[in-house]
Length: 79
Image (tube, rainbow, N blue to C red; front, side, top):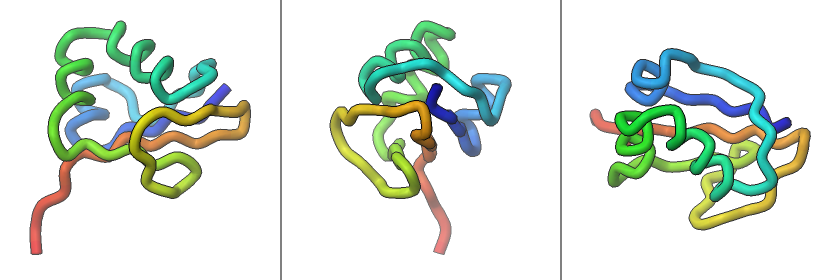
């Protein structure tokens, strides 16, 4: 199971910050999370949301293992 982390507004919407989820890929993981509610699905699909896989930003789909750590990062602001 991949360790999934949600930060900022994403964790507020989901009602959790960390969870283990069984998923073979980032795409499948997004589908699982989107199934938890329309508000979370919309927030994850919003512009600026980034995904870090094992502490490296990734774009597109990628395979996950039982040891993967996936973090969903909301848009950053500030200076």
